[in-house]
Length: 351
Image 1 (cartoon, rainbow, N blue to C red):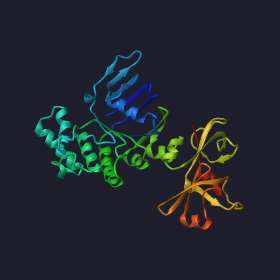
Image 2: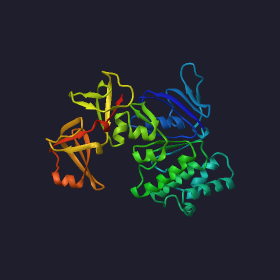
Image 3: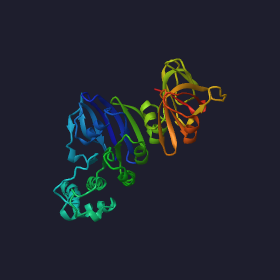
Image 4: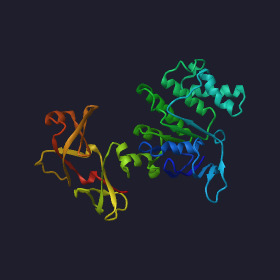
């Protein structure tokens, strides 16, 4: 299976294009209202772009624009299944009947539809619920039924629009494991705001900002060595915007120099970002002497304790410290602190 998409939707300010190969699973990440779901709806046929082309396995399912013969293949003929936040089960049917509905809707006989339904209910570890009413399920169980129904039609492409956003925290790990298995078996496109979902369920990622693809590549690179502000924020990293001074440093708007290692071609005078981990930031005394080239004096804005550590937000930076350090220094909002960051910990990316 191969997918090529290049669409424009003026009302939603989307102008995006990318490809997906049969061996890939793709995560689409980006800020709210950036166009992620619009892209998914366009692929599924649930939203009609103003212009562009969508091709699946060299078959054009949508085409519209100058010089193109208009094409808009109906939703049910695209060979695509889509799972969204809500399971949307038929309330008057049993679990098995819900899953059988998919195969029956594409023309399979009753026996084959039941066979497929039970196969996917087994895969989803809910075969024991086959005869239960769909209204008598937990949130996690309902979403597993919805996934089984989506897969029972053997789609050539699976679309996932934040499928775990509405689940209780206890139900998420098992659902993520199941989706990871599925994503390894068939081409999948996932829209998510969750870093763990993106890393666990995709081999490649794209960042959509303001309706445009701003970054793409292997998931780990996009999220853990990001070239965009959003990618850095999603990965829990620090990102500072500035102007290239040389291939070794950028200048922030306030004139502060941030030194690091260039990742990509840095042209003097062009915009760039400096990216580094909160764990790379050293909390020091004002008089401390270290080998770090980057030094900041900032005021603490907030403190968040989690997993035996503290994450401090200060002056637009994130800093990770141990609880012991937090207690020893008596850290509190409003307090001025001094930070050092070694240049080898900072990556400079053109934007």
